[in-house]
Length: 177
Image (tube, rainbow, N blue to C red; front, side, top):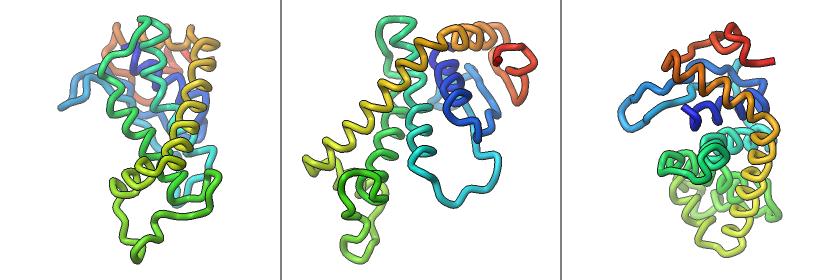
């Protein structure tokens, strides 16, 4: 519940343009819980700030675990993978780092997402840029979470009581300001 409440709190604070649909601690397949969120309108491109917000949302669960329990579990593994993929795309394909070289241009542009991440991370400069970007977003989330710890606690408690919050339920509970 703390992990999922961390995701939702960060989403609410850094991405007001996103719709928070479901926050759940009900196990589904491999996931022990989930935050389902999406764009309020059709989106065809994303800005650098929107991509950073998506990475920050991914880090919300991990940071909440560390803040409340003093360590993290294996739960954030897929979140970390997602954040790494977004960062690698920003650096390796979108020109959102120090380099304007797009690795998507290699051999006719037929590069898969996994191949792009692999190419970026196997290059020492690319890997350093991805690590720096990820580290910066992680630190921003740590600061945000410390400042808004009470929101994580309120959501966590509501999740433990109800198991799942859907749509505007969180607002009806008076959790959000």
